[in-house]
Every structure is written in C-alpha cells, then in structure tokens.
Image (cartoon, rainbow, N blue to C red; front, top):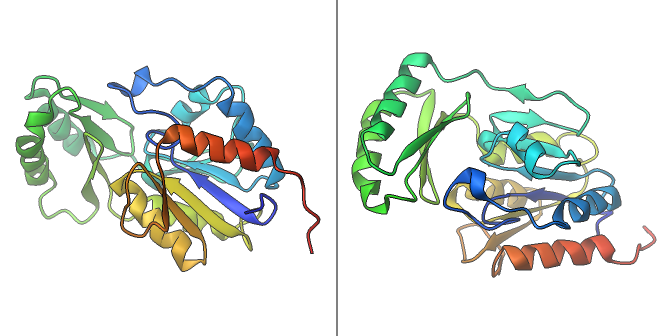
Length: 241
C-alpha cells in the first residue's frame, strides 16, 4: 500500500484511540497527531477523520493539526482542513427534548447533544440497553427523517439520509481523494456503511478488534492501527509510474 495512491478514511474512537468510559475521558497518544499529519502530507491531503464525534471535538483531540473530517456520522463535513464546516440541520427541538428526557429516566445514562444528532450513552448502565432502546424507538416511531443507530454502548438519533458511507462518497467525488484507492478503518456497526462505500470503489475496508460485515481484514486493536499508520507515514517514497 502506498500513501501517494490511496485515500485514507479513519474512524476515531475504538480505531485510532481506545474507548473510554466517557467521551471526554479519551486519551490521544502524544505522537498520533503528528503521524496523521505526516501521512496526510504523504497522501497529498487525501486523509479524513470519519467519526461519530463532532468536527469541533476532533479538532480539540488532534490539536494543533486540523484534518479533512466528517463528524456526527456524516451530518457534518469539512472537505479540507481550511474549509468551513458544513452541517445538516439540527434535530427539531421537540424530538431533542423527548430523547433527552428518555435518557434522563435511566441511572448512569446520559445524552450528548451534537446539534445534528443526539447520542445516548449507557456504558455505565449496560443492563439498561434493551429498555432504553425500546424507549428511543418509540420516540422515533415511523419518522422517515431520523433513525436510531446503535454503537458501542451508545444509541444515536441522527438524520436518516446521512452516514459514514455518504461521507466517504462525498470525499471521493472531490480532489484530492478522487481517483485514489480508498481505505477505511473502523471498529463499529456505524462503520459498515463506509465499508460498503469503499468496497464499491475498489477499496479496502479494515475492521478493528473483530470481523465485521463488509470488512476485508481485521487489525487487532487501536495500537495496531497506529503502528500500521506510522509505518505508512515513514515508508520510503516510491516513484509513481
């Protein structure tokens, strides 16, 4: 694999960094932001973070570097580091209130309002999953504009038409990603749409931790992902044919 012929799409929590009990408690290894910046340079800018986090949160995590990014599962897009963030409309206020009230009814559960989506985290209350999911599905009901997306100890109410697959497609239609071989690395059910998007474009999908539908291979853990990316960033440059 060569950085100058591929485009890199990277999930963050559970893929680049280890999952923590709370989204604000994650730790970014000291050298990781520089590794990503080096690889982005080697790839001519064709590297994007594709995350459930907001782009603003990603910028804080990987400071002082900024990257092309898709946040909130594709509801936010920044096609290049210097571009403005493009966001889907916020969830309507009534729906947001209902989701937050449902989360507040369970001990150890909290709602993270991303504006374009609301993530309901239950890592501290895993036994609440089934009842919590039932409550949120009842709120979403027959609506076609939003859907409930499961993840690692999280249930997210988000726009139905946007996901990590639509984000990858958006990037791949534009320079510097267009014409390259896409690579996506992710660990969760929320990444499977992106696996399908890169496969449809002749690319490579790598799952982290365990096999996932649509993935071509598995990296054992985030440490292995970081080692893989460090190797790519440091590989000798090859002359393009």
